Image (tube, rainbow, N blue to C red; front, side, top):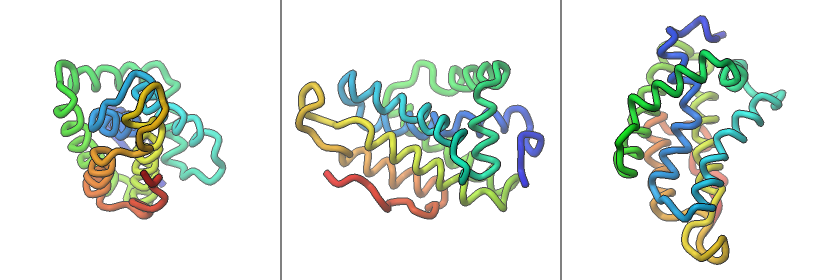
Length: 175
């Protein structure tokens, strides 16, 4: 069973950051209005909180969700974000986020092969929940669609980056 000690500090901070990166990819794919942006951004935090409380979550998912509360881990994640995304435009953020998820997928395959599929599936579900969190288009939350075409395309890119985890594409809110 993989845990924090199975990874280098840099690898671990990448793993801990990955749910936020998945959410960032969706938000950058179709940055809606302020309300949509806030809802999508907060969804990764809710996913981490849910994972902490979910008795069915895998040990690696739980370890990531638990460790984000550690100040040293949060600082490492923040430094990683700044290095990767500072000064990037939305299209660059999306591309870099999908590339990072691909790298995390490889890391999981190498260091946590028994838990990789479940973790990747969880990451994809974080991205899906982010896409479904805010309506795109419309005005002040009225009208619009639950998941835009750009977000659907990004979900497909994320699924590919993660090696098409189980469940990807299933349960996506219809527009």
